[in-house]
Length: 294
Ligand code: GLU
Image (cartoon, rainbow, N blue to C red; front, side, top):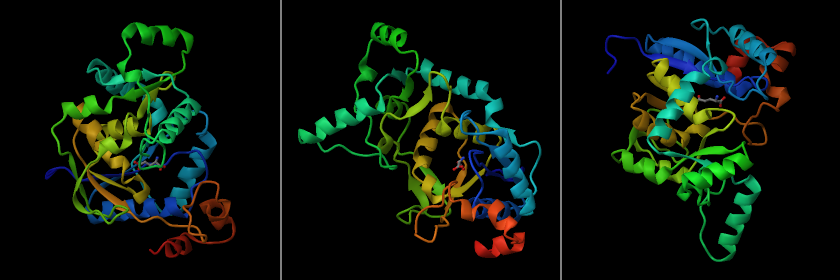
């Protein structure tokens, strides 16, 4: 596999807050693996959320990574400059009749699930803990969709999961060289149906994390996706989308997460573990590397 071209790794942060120790760890693992494989190392800026992602946060993020000693190919790919690529992928799924508009609000979804559970139905959650989409909008006629679209121009675009699974040959698998939350490793079976009819885009944003990550991994020729274990289950969706869109399959490596002292996942609001704060407190890049076990 990929014998004549060097492997390609990427670190793909979102500039919606300050980078913390967890990001440093993930970036350093990516960087080290790229070096070990004589590979290329890219940075991808995942800034499709035009409200939460800001240029000054992106600038600070890149400065932090430079301070850590990382070098990457420039310029980094900025997702907000490539919406046309995601629209194209989405359009092809729409042409395949795999996408439908969904007008249910979060509250309507919650209420519907609550009433199902009350009437004794065992309703499942997706791997992130949200209840699976319970609606029937996938059955709507074009006329019904049009009528509702006129009433509420802002809506979600969902993947019809059952229809999508009928288009691909199962089982869908992937190679995991790290470990999943239940120690999954080696040849793993993707389980996209655990996500139900997930949202792939919105009427005002032609993409989502899942769709743009998959499109970009292919366009950037990524051969090795190295990221935190919290994204292990998202890989099932990524593999399904790759099959539907005819995109190549990278190898996956999910690494452990750096946890806060209270055992919880670090978040961008954990100000005290931000690389900025540590640097201002006088830590050197070597100190940070030691802190995350390098
Ligand atoms: N942008 C994602 C994050 O910051 C990473 C996505 C990925 O590596 O696939 O969590």
